Length: 400
Image (cartoon, rainbow, N blue to C red; front, side, top):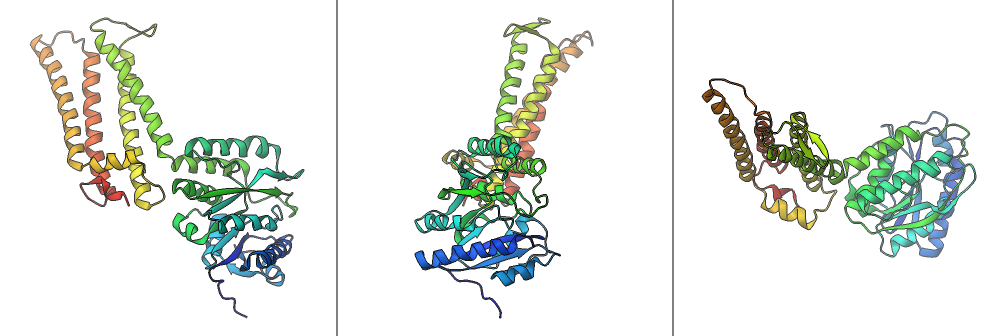
């Protein structure tokens, strides 16, 4: 018999599967029990969808016998399987969970209740619930998960206590708003991060984590996937990835270069108790150039996130982009380049006037070419910002 997608005001449990013959039947059965509770308590219909990623151990047939609808997802990856499974259902509420019996799908019942009460997305929290002995390696429990969750809270100003819990529930409308695309394990991070960036109403409920019953190593690689989660968090946080380092580089470089210029012809200048000379002018100029470039990268990353719709612009960003025009960036870049060329030209003129004598203008020449390079970056950066804005002069066009 052909299965038809479950319609709205219903629940779909989506289980990614790749060779889970030892546990898939138990997981499907438990998910069906959760559906029975939802039917009796909240009058919700539902189904269990197993998103199979190419199993070769008969997992598909076992899942069907247990009561699931099997959706074949040819593209490999944890995220790809979930994306394929979610796309197969029109249910109002979507639940995801692993197929290794590490999560009890009955724990999703209070998650659905929070969604029915108005939340958009509900995370499970193993740290607020229970972690059974042997369910989580010590390095994941005391290092990996706490560190990554803390970084998430700092970078994105959220109160989520367990950013990597594998059982979650989300409204279908909110899921579609997220436009998730990651095909690997970072899918889990993308879901959380974009939910925070779009200011969805996020709730948490305690869940229990049990030992994996498959009797083989999990698909998850803690170090590799942990690093991928960290990198993904940074990519979705342009302020921390680009703007904070840029501010530090520009502040340090400008301060040091100004101190050296104010030092006049003195071979060494005392700065905060340290004697510095012309070598530090080279370092300072490099910091300024890298800082300008990094800040431009940050602005462009923010533009992209606004244009793609997975980040809401802050009032400051709206004001800045509302006033930003290509012509302003071109004028600023040309002004800096002109200032640098005038400065370098005056040094060259003085050198010529001295009949090509000894030249002691290293700091001034470094500053002049720092201005020229920074101006060139701003000039061409303005063009790229306009390209990201749809080839328009007004950069506010990226705002929805």
